[in-house]
Amino acid sequence: MAENQTKFTLLPKILNGGIAGIVGVACTFPLDLVKTRLQKQTVGPGGRKLYNSIFDAFSKIYVSEGLRGMYRGAGVLILLVTPEKAVKLAANDYFRFHLKDENNKISGFRQGLAGALTGVVHVFVTTPMELLKIQLQDAGRVAAIEGKIDPTGGKSMIPTISATKITTDIIKNKGIRGLYKGLVATWARDIPFCMVYFPLFAKIDSLGPRKANESGDAKFYWSFLGGLAAGATSAFIMTPFDVMKTRIQSVTKSAQGDKTYSGVWDAFRDILKNEGITAFFKGGACRIIVIAPLYAIVQGVYFMGVAEKLLGIEKDSKITKKS
Image 1 (cartoon, rainbow, N blue to C red):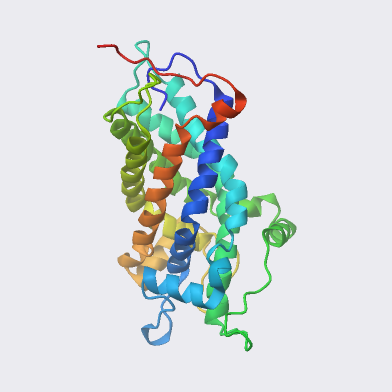
Image 2 (spheres, rainbow, N blue to C red):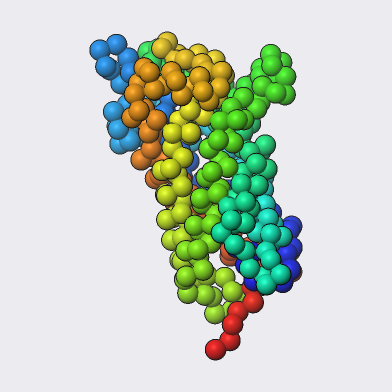
């Protein structure tokens, strides 16, 4: 984080955020796909479910769609996660750096404010990215529900769908604003997420052993563990908002029984009335399994200083006390 720094160089932080995001997404995307499928499914006639658990979803998706299906939508996410994570991590460091007091300290309130501002800013990149990702990830579930099976191979016949086509159709029918369907729901999830995650990570990170190079950064394994703990905690708290956001960002009624929602309140009322309070935690365990290692990897890679090495510049250092 930006504590005790005497200068702030934005470009390498943006690049480090992008690099960290690509590495993290590549490692955790199949889990994210399973999370989306679990959150999107509704109970069919007689209480039937397409997926009964995380393991069951993994097995069925792999059998019906193969390894390629496990990474459906990954290209979009990896492409767009670069600016998303770059903005998110760099923006939080930027706000923390500029919200410090005259003693180079930042209070708990200002840490929360920095997190809130980070959430407000980065959602403008996140919303279109996740809307496209959800449509691509959900294609296999729709095919399975509708029973479209390839007679030669026995696998689900996934409809031909691409991020370009989805984007073009949305803009054609609803304009640029269509790409921001679910913006309020994403804000409702990500602003409090950032307010919890970043201060919690900073606290955990400050307690760990430091690198021997006098940079003031925690050792890689400690940043990794800090991201793991802060990510798991924040992900669990925000799961209900993630469920509503996932439902809202379905552009159309994807399959029989699916619903579309006009906003957060509409989704909240309908889910609570028809599915009960437990529905708000659908995919919750999977979300934690996705977010915790994602942020662990992201935070560990972010502080490695890859961008500084590539650019041939000195890494911003924190002031360390000499004993």
